[in-house]
Length: 205
Image (cartoon, one colour):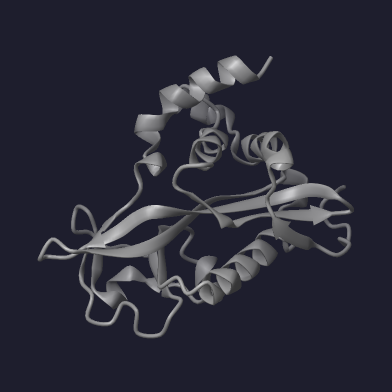
């Protein structure tokens, strides 16, 4: 389907094991960039991240696919191993999400928006407290995200910048909380790039 053509209804449902290979292929297509091969040695790492999250840090009830005419065109996954480390050493659990993936030919047509709205609503209904992550600062505020500094939270290195964002899912969850955000290790591209390259060598002709 070409960009600019009006889409039919987007259906969101929970990911099932039968979707796994298709989702990884979709994610690889969504993130693959030739320039990343020169920079990190592989065109994408995100599909490998999704593969590793399943059955580990990924949250099944917050992993969704988007379908149009029974074709999977988008995917989102949330993880549970990120937290805020407070000055007293205590940890405050928060969600992280991503990769959020949309097939290139379906991008900028509302698929990502549908996945975000559905997953945020579901996470709130399941009584998760907050989401912290790094993302595009002009896109995600439309869903209710704010700069993390508004909640007194910094990165592990003590920094703040517009792409570091947070959202309370339960009112007051981050009230009185301050500290450093510790992101799950799967999001460290420097540490996953070699494993992603080996994974591609095993799974892709």
